[in-house]
Image (cartoon, rainbow, N blue to C red):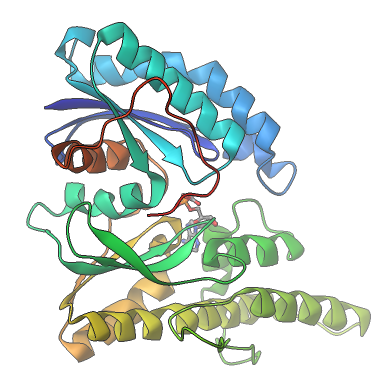
Length: 333
Ligand code: KG4
């Protein structure tokens, strides 16, 4: 089954063709990151306009890259949430039009389910059940994946996402947007214990997380150091921030896997590209005898292939939409 999949939830427009959920025939992506970098973050209005400009050309590119004609497409899939509402609407409306024109089924896909499914592309042997650590620019959550479409959230951030925390601290340090990768580079060779930063404990669900206190502590530290005329060890600050973010994520992921009885842990999302977090996950999983799947860097960020992969399983489970499909900035699992 050839699925033509669209992703436009934030600042990447993507169109891909995926066969039977696992084989990527093409994956065309147009990133707008450079345009938003000027403003230090994503400007929703610009994001929507850029999606409109490139989505048709990307579709042609995806079909040509796959060596297919429109008539070879069996279904159309699209991210319908969560994300920036204006950006999502571009993908949803375009996908609705394509599905209508081709007279093919339309499959709505949850963005974070897509991030998890990126791992099905990279690891042919991977099948649920497993515990997923989803860490992106907009979300941080632990998901009990019982089946391809049967999953529930065990814990999530109460405020900022891990990626948002990286991005906002990076911005105050004068690093380019998105700040996760520059923070990783800056942290290289830094002392991760030099700056004591808070590790949040939240009341209630102990698998929930919080990153806003850490963000504020790091930003205040940067400003106070400057006001006192002291030199900031930028590299050690980046390393200390990364250690604090990892300490927030990794022990909770291990605990969540233990509680569900999962022996497999899967990482997903842009922040899963982080070297330190990957190394900490590897160490903890080796200690606890848990099999770890880390997506290749090319599949950590937003892409269309992951939407096409998840769409296949959604289709098998009977998920189909009609022309009334809407986009949602927030969306339950
Ligand atoms: O999954 P993604 O591409 O978009 C969303 O769905 O949100 O994630 C983007 C986030 C950004 O916050 C970016 O700074 C972060 O992933 N990121 C990283 C790294 N590469 C990207 N964070 C930490 N370390 C990295 N190497």
